[in-house]
Image: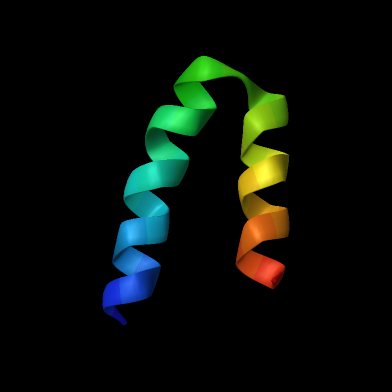
Length: 31
């Protein structure tokens, strides 16, 4: 569960930067 919370925290700033960055983060999640 902690991992999910950390991922969400990272996704929040990523969205602010660029929507494309969010897709990259999703790929890392799949890995």
